[in-house]
Length: 130
Image: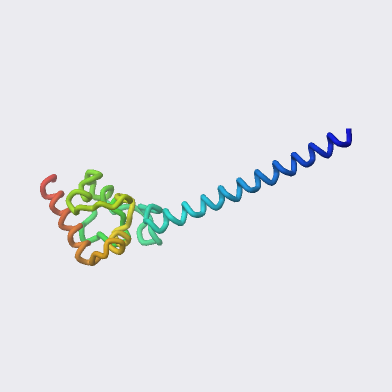
């Protein structure tokens, strides 16, 4: 009877160690996924560092800033999901969930000029779709 008790205690100990290991692996995966989402601009598409708590009611193209994601621009300007991708020739796999600043940094593009291109594309869409 004593050997059965010792066997079940060792099985419990092994199971506890395996479950603890799985929890650590899951925690590591969760933290790395969070980091990736944050650095790629996928985190907080509508709120970034306290700059804006909600989308503006009547957005203007002059309101566009580099912290905004393409997804956010599609939302506030009511653009079709692939409009900016097509009109600006964006081929990044993180589109539309990437910040403009992150995109320009990755592609080595001048941020100011690219923001002007974004503004022109949105102005063009608005003028052809009143």
